[in-house]
Length: 285
Image (cartoon, rainbow, N blue to C red; front, side, top):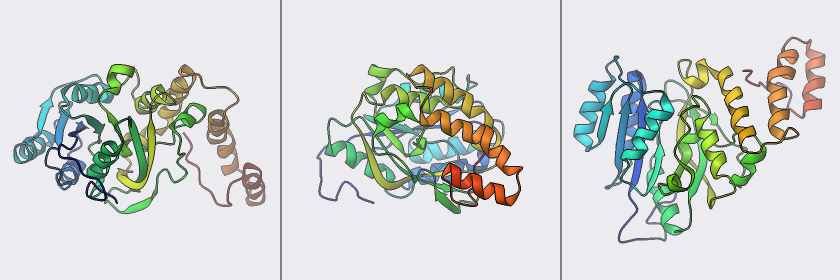
């Protein structure tokens, strides 16, 4: 992974802010915070926004914040998007992101983000590869291996960006506003759609985040609730009926369940028709 010393230097490096939303996630929280502390970025601004946890999270947050100079609050909120927005409004950095309290930064991830933005003062947004890990931190696969290189393509498809691998300038809030708090599952996708085709964006071909997949996460326990919000966001930003999004949604919600009930020969036939490799497993909402 490249860093700020790989052919680029700046006497006054950009200050990055990481917002960490949390609610009763003490099981993974310490590892998330430790992955931030391991970034070795001297001016890293960390804001932890807890939703009033009762599982011991606050004790972890208090101890870590005192040791690492982070700011934090713990109070009830109206959902994850609202919690993240609180953190954004507290941000001191010129570039910002949020890291959910069960995800991780790999070594050098924040330095890479700083380097990208310092290299191009006109750059507004970056995203990169995300490694999916299990509850114990074991690698599973790249979560967005088929990531497109042009953010504008987001307006014609479902989300190909995994949020923990994103960074953006704080100035985009002045142009596009904060996260839409009426969304509870697809607020990141809706936010990215607002910027798609209207900002200078760059894909970073490195693993810049680890996304934890486990049964108690939103993705694992409430997967079926994502698609309606994704569809709402897609249509709100000019998505077309005859788009890859619709074909993908139909395949996941109608075709693949039927495939699962068919005999093996017919499954192979449909896999071929759909252009999938035999044995492909598709998560159904």
